[in-house]
Each structure stands twice: as C-alpha cells, then as structure tokens.
Image (tube, rainbow, N blue to C red):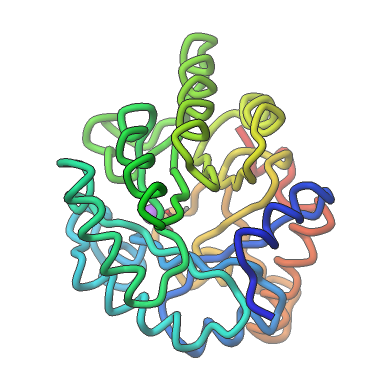
Length: 263
Ligand code: KIV
Ligand code: NA
C-alpha cells in the first residue's frame, strides 16, 4: 500500500517514528522501501554525493526532475519527496508553483523547500493549489554562504524563539511536514511538541517524529568529512539491505540518534 500524508499523520498520532533516507535512483528506491523506509527524499544533496560539488547550489531543476523520475519509478510504497533546488522557488510563489509542478509531474508526492517565515506565503500558495510542502528549517544548506559555514541553528534563546515562531507560521501556512537540520535537541523537542504536523530531524536529536540521513552517509560511501549527526550503518551489517534495516530499526526503536549524534 502506498504511504501517503494520511499514513504519516497517523504515525505521528500513534507515536510511531518515521524513517526517511535520501534516494536518487530506482534500484535503491526499491531496496530502501523493502527494508522498511517510509519516506524517500530525492535530496539536492545529490549535488554533493552524486555530482561531487562542494555545495547544493549548482543543482538544477533538470537534475531534480531526472532523479525524481528515477526514484518514483522504483518506489511502489514509500512516499517520495523531491527537493526544490536553489533559485527554483525563492523569487516568487508563482515561480515556486511552476517548478514544484514539474517535480510533482515527475512523480513526487510532496516537495521540500528551505526557509523560515519568509517562505510562508509560498507554502500557502503551493498547498492551496494541491502541492503538499515539507518545509526545511534550522540549518539550510542552500544558505551556507549566508551563514558563513556549517553552524548549528537555534542555539541562543532568541534564535530558538525565531525557530519556533517560524515553525508555527509555516504550519499555519499549510506545511504538511517540517524538517529540522542541525538544531539543538532540546529546541527540536519543544518545536515537535508544539506541532500538529510530523517533524523530521537530521542533527536535531532523538525527539522529532522521524529521522532522515543522506543515504551515502548512512552507508559510509561518501568520502567527505563526517558530520556529528552521521552514523555508518554498514558497521556490523553484512549487506546494504541489512544496513538499511538496521537504520530503520534504530529509528523506529528510538536508539538512533543518541547524544553523540546530537547538539
Ligand atoms: O538534500 C538532502 O539530502 C536534505 C537532507 C539533508 C534533509 O535536504
Ligand atoms: Na536538501
């Protein structure tokens, strides 16, 4: 049975953790959902892990449409979310709709945008027109140049307040899911408790409604510097399938992430 937003809302209600991984092709889509992954994210992290770029900024709509088509073809059960790449949605709600529609036509069931309250108008525009939105707050990789590096977001009390205000505004605008990246665990917990919609964390501690990792990090394939929140699930596994099953089991059982992966 195909996982839908209704499925995920029910999982949050029942206190069942949502297991998400990034995915970029049909074979992995099939393998990941067989191993129990609920949601596949066609992440613009493909700019880093597939294309070898130092950031996600060079990723284009053409790249995202192509990989969304591949993943959607392989995914029979898992919900497919596609990232909107840099400069495909920030200019206006109309620009966002035009590009989001291409990703939906490519087989995505939801799109993901980066940005806080400034994106609320766009979230409203998309959701009112039938495109579900997952909003990515906290550390936003497309804004790495504005941050001046990889920095945990929401550390000070003021920053934490802004994060919570943004989360509530985005939910009110119609966002159906909220993803928090590199946020202190305590802040991610407070935001999650305040939200009716499911929250997904990466580097956001154990108390979000679900977890996501970049597939190539979870399998120890990516050669770059390992972030604190990354765990290589190939350790102790005898196959890729086994490693992904271990990830799903750890997320569902609440044994990943632990404090060593959190801020
Ligand atoms: O592109 C991506 O992989 C992401 C995750 C890090 C959440 O946005
Ligand atoms: Na992304």
